[in-house]
Image (cartoon, rainbow, N blue to C red; front, side):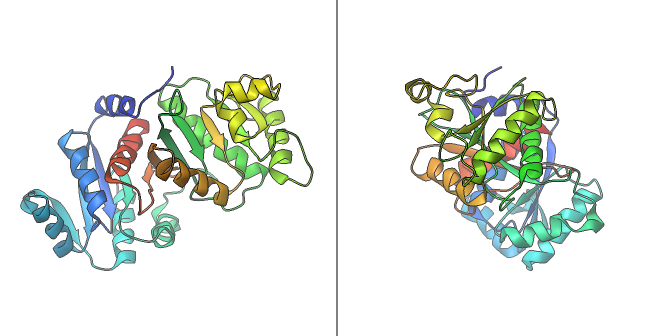
Length: 299
């Protein structure tokens, strides 16, 4: 199965039971708009945790009756994150979303052992992009969580992303390990990692996907570029998932696609007991809406 549009995720999410979405520090206009849109489509039922006065103010501004909203008043950002995590821990919500709060504050609550929300050994971020310059949805990992992952962590990041694609119906996603060059260079750590990750895939240690690398970005997404460079690969020019070398490069690629490449994205954290909607504060309400949909689709 090939996914070409983010609207395909809406179709998947609509087939699922309505999920309870708890939003930490929910006094963010784009997050509010996104969650209300998900509610209108009967995909998610939001619980707003944050400054009640500001949240009701947003509702009034958008001509929405705040009396019908579920709001838990807490003006402290860290406290709002704690309450949201507690609701997840108690099974009173299905999906958690970051609102108008710094990621470090949000993640501190999420990683608090008393809530038992960490499921896998590595939390990782996966963004899926719909861009007019590529033939299908494109996954990028990791743009928000792991600063400088080693080979073991990169293997787990790939596994997280592959599991998510499986849940979206992509049976054997093609994973490109990105670097500045397609040649192995001991001085460029990403190329060495790519070689070892490719070997792990061939030996079945990373399964249910096809891995190739190192591949430069052009070779990963352009058949013409791969052919021109004489690269023969099942992945080159047709990648489903791009593994970036580190957080810096991942974040730059993420924002380049959104702000220069005309893309719309959906981003979530994987590896917790529930999907975690984690978007940039500068992302559009459409991107935040699609991130909610993405979380529901893989739940």
